[in-house]
Image 1: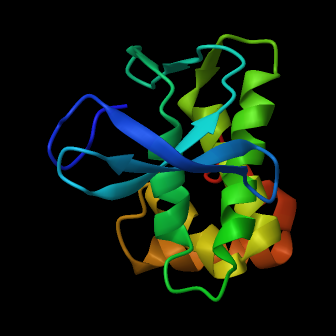
Image 2: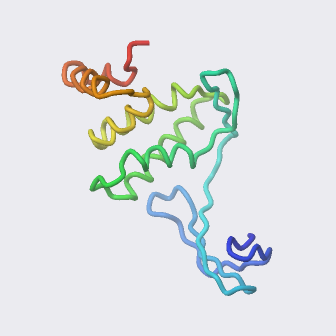
Length: 160
């Protein structure tokens, strides 16, 4: 493993353990060249997923991009970071075991919204505002009103 600080190619593992959810291995590493310590995580990747974007472009699935979107939505919410990590790992596992090698951004977004709906209502609305590209306050008002009257229908808002 290359050191992220000095780019030396020979680092050593000082400690390895599984995470609480048993989804990955956490390794503490040490660089003999610069003396830096850092942590890496190893995850099982069942298959290489391809994401089909709305504009027709196909790109490799990026777990970090999904994690960044969800982390932004839950920012400053009083949620256990491990619970959020479990949510992200669960979404990735569902996508990898779906049987499809190609998934749409729409499917990923709706799965994330559904998971956030059950986790935290504010994070759900935050994610939805970016996912549905809200442009002004009226979009929020319409979304929240629809959420109050028909909660499960709000995953696909606006009506597709």
